[in-house]
Image (cartoon, rainbow, N blue to C red; front, side, top):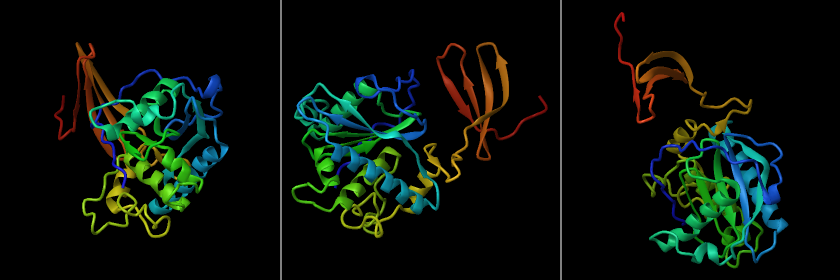
Amino acid sequence: MKRSKVVGAGLLCLLPLCPWLAVGGVPIDKPHPQSVRIVYLVSADRSVREDFRKGIETAAKDLQAWYAEQLGGPTFRLNDPVVEVAKSDKDAKWFYSHPNGDDKDDWGFNNGVAEARRLVGARHGDPQYVWVIYSDGPGNQGQGGDGVAVLPEDDLLGLVGQHPTRKDVKRWIAGLGHELGHAFGLAHPRDPQKDADAIMCMGVYGKYPDKTYLTEEDKEVLIRSPFFFRPSGEPVVKPAQAAEKYDYDGGSFTRYTANGKSEWVEPKADGSAEFRFVETGRDKE
């Protein structure tokens, strides 16, 4: 099984959004914030393979329907186009051989994220997108975590039935479902014996789509995600609304409400700190 990549609990870094660019500055047709954004990285010494692009798109749409079935309706959105093609100036071997981190098994993940960030603005903890990055660099260490999943050439070959040993395309669709789950914040099951067939465990092997599943704990995480929407298009998690605000010298207090719950946020005016509180009671003042 591929390892998940855990990249800290992480505060969101609200940097200016990257322009909607693909290869050669071609604008994305219909950007969808709060969606899954998929990038097919083509190495400098490789050519674009249309079968790879179509294989990725087919897998993403298949998983979109599978997640909806598992959750009873809600699922994630896909960006438009579903797969962006970005041409790298790095050779294929660079992705999994260039040192980037203490653990060699992380090099492919770290290099894939770095190159996708340079080309199209991918990043961890992005409030607008969950990123899926396919690289045609030779490797077999797919990983996911903190809003990003990176998958290597092994997975691309698998999606088109050309993997040298594992010919079942569904196994590679399930592999994307597993790493995408990590990108959404899912962990491996607490009880790997009880939930051995879960997609976040061994269910990627010969169980997808009918004999693997999301655990109840997985579902609880996903329905709290801002990246999941009901069939009507309504977000499962409604955006927080400012209900009250009080200013004082040096900062302010704002009460936000969402999904029947409320929270007070106190940012300092100089940006030095931000505090969050749950209201337990109030007096006349």
